[in-house]
Length: 471
Image 1 (tube, rainbow, N blue to C red):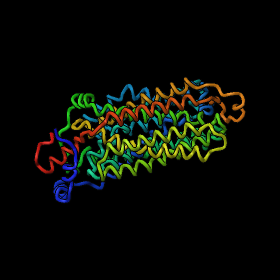
Image 2: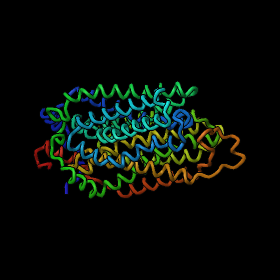
Image 3: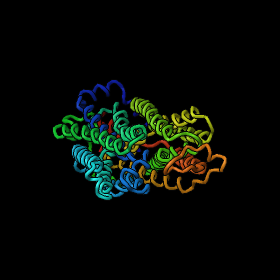
Image 4: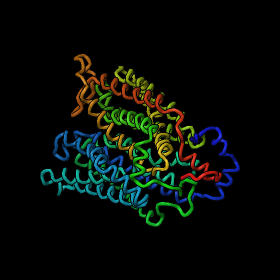
């Protein structure tokens, strides 16, 4: 059995790179394609959780209950479960161009309906505004898998081996950046007079979605693949959908990767959802939670960029994943230890930033490692399965985290700054449960994944050297 070791690493020397440059090329248009996909994903992330930071104002604006407000964000989880594998099949069969154009159209149409729901004539009819807004939300939820599942395919089809992880990082990080932006923007914009400010917030989201849609029209000319591939495996053999799905399911090492990805992303989504409640119960306002959540994501972007550069150069996927996941878990345990401390905002902020830095560093590593482990399955299959696990685990951990909350002692309720739908609760058990899931996933991953085969890299080395057929 061929293994990826020092002998294959040594093959990536000057002579092979020179040969690589003679046979393969990249195109400047790839950066436009990366930016347009990232903008679409960012706008979609903003629309996913538009209403989550302002539940009371949203309930008043649409004349609905707080449980109905939660349906806006839950619709994304449900849509992902219902159409996730359909989206994987469509992207694999119809290509990147279809995925981007279809997703952009649904995203913009959904954003437009949400704007219509805020028009006075529509709000005049009882619950019609909520129905229109929910219809728009569902359309944007349908668009999300087409944006989340495409980055690895875009990077494999258009970017060289030395740029794949960076390209995957930028396109994948756009969605959580959108979430961070809305967590800061929504509570600050809709601070007073929600009847006037919520329509403005919806317009901001719609303008970004419209900009992404306009940019996506260029894909009609750009196509799904370049005329000349950027790397050997970009034009190599890819398994049909069902065979690729079987390849993913039967790859033992991928299941260990899926474990840490599911546990880690579920922990992060649960933390981001419950962060206002984690902090307001101990004297920190919802605005603090929004700002710290956003800073955690933006610091995470720095970590993801740094890790993307490192693995693009070294190809040390296993080592990078294990180091970052271990440190991320330690940082989250640090947050669990300090979030209930009184008057320690700097300490809490540092623990969140440290967790965000290393947790987000895992993203490009895991997505690219999934492709390496399951090659020659199509890139969209492994990334689609990983993102589906994110939605399932995020929903599960949020519900379980809320279910095991306990009442605060009477003496601590006085320092609470929770209001409206967010009630003061003791989330100590929730934090410990999240930490347990993180530790469990990290241990299983570190023990189970040992000396994995980087099948795509092996195939590329062999194809360049001409010593074997990579298919």
